Length: 568
Image (tube, rainbow, N blue to C red):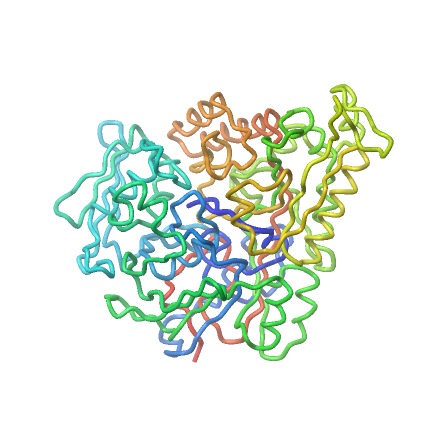
C-alpha cells in the first residue's frame, strides 16, 4: 500500500500492506530502529525502544554506507507541497533542517543543532512561542537560518494564498503573526487564542528562497531536490530519476556533529525486487512486516529483525468524483459490504500478531484518549444491510449479478499497485465481497512507481493506501484528513459544514477536551461522508544487517540522521 504524508499524516503507497520499510518521523518514517524482545500484540510501545538499537555516538564507527529500498522517488521534493508523499519526507530529512525530534513514545525535543531554546507561553489570551535559533545555522547557499524561515514556512502553509498548494494548513492557519524577536536569530510566533498542539508545527522549515512565491513553491522542487536550499549533516550527492536512486553525502557546510555514514542511498524497487536485493546483500535493511517477506529472511545469517508498533493507518479510499461513487448511499453500502477483519487476517496471516480493528485517523489504539469512532459511525460490516441500502436506492441486480440503475452499471475502477501478493489477495477479497452485494470493483494493477500519479491525479474509484504520522498530535491535523480543501482528502467528500465543525473542535484549548470533541465529530464525519475506511495499523518489522545503530522500528521516534551508523 502506498503512503501519504502530512506533517502529521504522510501519504504512501500500499507500502504498509507490503510491510515496507517505514523509517523516520512521519511516524512511519523513523530513520531509527531496533531489536524487539517480544512482539507487541496490541500496537503498544512495549518494544519500541528495543526496536531502535539506540547507541551513543562513541559506540558507532565512522564510515560505511546505508542503502535501502523505497516505493518511489516522488517527483515532488518539497515536503510541504500537497503532492509530497511519505517518501518526500524521508528524503527531506536527510538534507534539510530538522527542528523536531521525538522519542518512541512521542515525547518532543527541539533539535539543538538548529535551535537553542523553544519557549511557549500565553500572553493576553494568545499562545506565543519563541524560537531561538542556533547562531551557526545556515543554509547551504550561505543564507543564515533566521526568523524569516519561520515566516516563510507560515505564509506558504497558512492557506491565506490559495496559490500555494500546501500539504496542510492545520495550525499554521491559527497563527496571526511571525515576527523577529530580540534579533534576527529569534522568531516569535503568535496564535489567535490558545493553541493546543504547538509542537506539531515547524518540525521542518523551508528556505525563504524556495517559498518566495507560489510558482517557486509549487514547481521548483519537481524532479529537482535543490540541495543548495537545504541544511544539515548531509546533502544530496546524486539523484538519478531514470534509475530511481537518490544518495546523500556528508555536508561540508555543516556546523554540528559530522554524519557517521559516508553515504546514504535509496533505490526505488518493486516489492519482490526489494526483498531479493536484501537477501543478496545489496540492501542493508528491508521491511518484513508480512508473512511472505518475513519467511524469506528469518533464517538468514548476520541479520536481525526489529519491530515496534506502527503509527500509521492502512486505509481504503473511495473517490466521490467517480460516476457511481458520488452517491452517499452507494459509498455507505460499499463500506458495510467490506469485512475488515478478513482484510486484516490476510495481512497478518502467519505472523502471530493480532490487533483491534482501527477506528480513527486521529489517534491510535495505544494512545490516551483513543476511541473507535468508525464503529460508532455504524459503518461496520453488515452484508444484508448493505444490500438493502442498494435495493432501497433503486440499484437492481442485472443478469450478471452486478446491479444497475438508469442504464448504468454499479462498477468502478479499483486501482492497485505493485507485485505484492498480500496486496493482490486483499484486492481479490474486497472484489469478491462487493460482488456478493452486486458491486463490481474492477481491479486495475499498476506499477508501484505510479503511486504519485494515481494519488495526485485521483486515478481510481477505490484505492488502498496509507497515512503515516509524523508526530503524536493527531487532532492538531484533523483538517488534513477531512476538510474539503485538503490535498490529503482524495475522497472529495468534505463539505463547508464539516470544515466549520473541524474548525470549532480545533479552537478548543484543552487537549483532552479537544480529543473528546474530535472523537464525536470523527464518528459523525465517517457516517456523513463514507469516503475513507481504516483497515489496520500493523507492526513495523524491519530486517537489517547486524550492527546498524539508531535505526529500525521506532514508533514515533525521530532522531538525528548524523547519529545513524554501524556499531563498533
